Amino acid sequence: MDFVGVEGEPDQEIETFTLRQSVDGELTWELVAELAFVWDDTHQAVAARPTVNFYENGEHRAVLTAGEGTINLLTNDMETREGVVVVSDDGATLKTEVLGWDNRRQRLFTNLVVTYETGGTVLTGSGFESDSDLTDWKIRHPRGTVSPEELGGEVF
Image (cartoon, rainbow, N blue to C red):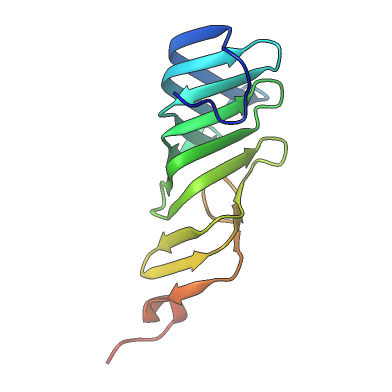
């Protein structure tokens, strides 16, 4: 496994790695990976095929999957890579190759090409920022198609 963003050999190898964060007793997200490597001195973990479930007020809101992810174990900031997909429980989908998680701000972000789909709308852009359930989002340099229903129109 290629360890992106970390140097040296890992101190630990953990099968069925789980990391959870809660605020005031409420679960905000949970990361599960079949395998993780941990570097004690830099407080970094690299997770293989992570799945991150996001919650709000105790309710599941979205799921992120990726080929690999690096987690800062002090801040819980993350960078996920390789076929990153986020699907909200409301049906919105985000796809990109690298997606970060700013834990303090509770925001997903990337400067790379993204595809965002919801309803009949499909947008691509070269940067994206959003909350974890893809409802409060910004896309840079958007282009794409919007369904007439989304604009309040109709097809004839």
